[in-house]
Amino acid sequence: MTTVAVLGGGIGGLAASYYLFKSPQVTKVLVLESSSRFGGWLWSTRRSDGAVFEHGPRGIRPAGAVGHNTLNMVDDLGLGGDILPVPSSHVASQNRYVYMNSQLHRMPSGLSGLLRTVPPFSRPLLLSVAMEMLVKKGAEEDESVYSFVTRRLGKELADIAVDSLCRGVFAGDCRKLSVRSCFPVLYNAEQRRGSLTLGMLLGSGPSPAVPPGPLAQRSVTESWSQWSLSRGVESLPECIAEYLRRSGRVELHREAAVQQISPSASGWTIRLEDGVVSADHIISALPAKALASVLPPSCQTLIQLLQDISTVTVAVVNLEYEGSILPVSGFGHLLPSSEDQALLGVVYDSVPFPQHDRTNGPTTRLTVMMGGAWFHEVFGPPDTVSEERLLARATEAVQCHLGVPTAPSWSRVTVQRDCIPQYYPGHFRRVESMRSFIRENNLSLSLIGSSYDGVSVNDVIFNGRTAVEQLLGTGV
Image 1 (cartoon, rainbow, N blue to C red):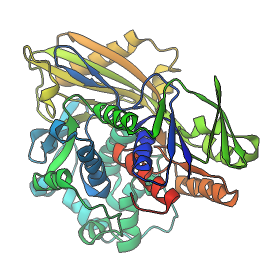
Image 2: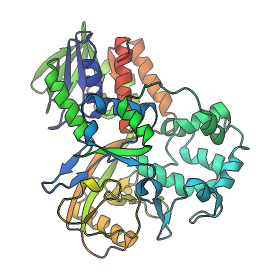
Image 3: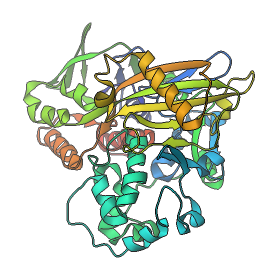
């Protein structure tokens, strides 16, 4: 394996390049990124007064094999000293809210929360959990998240908690998202144990084994619920890119948009705006539709499958207010689609990460998320909506939901076009068909990134690692 080209310099492409560099089997790695920066959706604004604002993911979960894998990488890159951990005992971990019926409600947590009737729910959640164990296993190969949760836990939980959760995680509609692909742990619990409760207690099947390094072990000992970095999450891709630059075996190219890729005798010919490069293997970390647009006509079956993967656009509005303005303390609040289709949720950034507040005088940083699966319906085409309209909608939400009468002292509006892939029922079959086509046609091509096997930062990094291991036939 002489030269591997990695298409896309987001966190997936950078992670794959990091694992490729670890292997002596690879002589040269080419990273081709179409934009002017590396990091993709991991994007932070750092102000000179110390304030940090996130325009994409803001906290990364440390749990499980994929969480340990990311922390092992962070450790290896020498970023351990920059970690900002949020323990599970922290108010941001304990308090999560839902805004419903024009009111903030703290979501039940702990045993006491399960035993009591807590608004907006009409009965104790423990009743739903207990009844769930009596529900028969579903016969479908896949179904929507909403259908699955309604069947197993009842309509109320699906309408409020799960609807809100899917909007917070996927900016998506739980009535259209696949339970098998979006929440594989829940699907596997039912398949293997016949019950979500038993699945959680007894385990729902094998998970990848990643020995935790010192930082991951610390996250377990200190019981972290999430973490960030002192200069924002963009520090992670920046640090990987710098690590790769120093390696001597990795070439990083920005503003290098791929025009076309064509199979050649030795692998691939990759046509760029200003020339042609060759590679023995391609790892594509491009969004599915972007890859579809550069594949040759001989890959029509693959092109069609890639084009079938939908995405949604999210408006991210960062706000800063003078002083301490929150009526409650916690991670933030989500809204079910029945309450307000436009507003997905509000994150109280200053609560989990006060270290990102400016250094001179108290402020409150918030992020309002809007649109997602409802963007076009509510705001129209992303190209036509003004920043002023989105800012007004966000500040109105803060005023209405949190009772904040003042205007923000600083704001930034970012429209993240097609940022979150939507896994609809049957998604796992589509991905299987793509990889079968690649195998059957002996294409030296690997598919990674959020379009296929998970949208979280941890999933994307781990899938980059998995692709490299499969390519080289070794562990990394």
